[in-house]
Length: 264
Image (cartoon, rainbow, N blue to C red):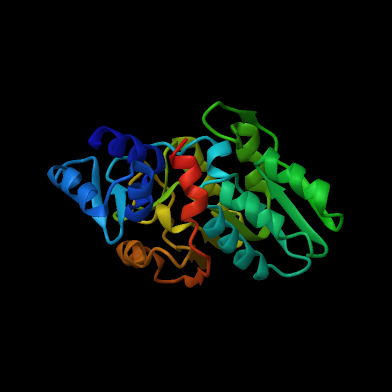
């Protein structure tokens, strides 16, 4: 059982104990007993009602992330969209939460959006007639759904937008907003410098999870939005958000949705 637990924690980085017990057809006490010997090493830790990875691990493929924790990400994206005003100029990076955020911009008028995500650009062009969309040029690598490279960075430097909208790989306890790949962290930092204000979206599974490259600026973010399922995790990273307005989006429990993914 412990091998399967490690495999799932490494894949999803944060897993609720109740969901894991359902997937493994055992009790929460049995899981806690199995991982007790791992508490002091670098693999995982118990945080409240969840197991959290202590390892810096790359995110799952976008096809998996678009379905994992959908209720939480959708609630975060919907709340974030409600803070955007008609006529705003936005710079949006790639990611599953940000793709759901973009879906909630359909009713906005006269938006100007620049993005490094082909997925987000296509969605906005297809579903929002009152939105001007620029797909920032660049190269596409296997590890990401975002365009990157010198062409990308040069265009971002020229932009002046009202909001940069980000969703980092994780919110580390010691380093704040972080990414697994260096190029993603560098792009994020440049995006923040191109905006009057920065909004950061992070579902609670990312809170307190380590990653490799920081994108936490000295000025911090203006708005931080997470869901309502990560109170303990939020306490671990709250010191990185002293200047931010913090919002907790209300989402219903999504165990039934995530069970399908973890049990596959």
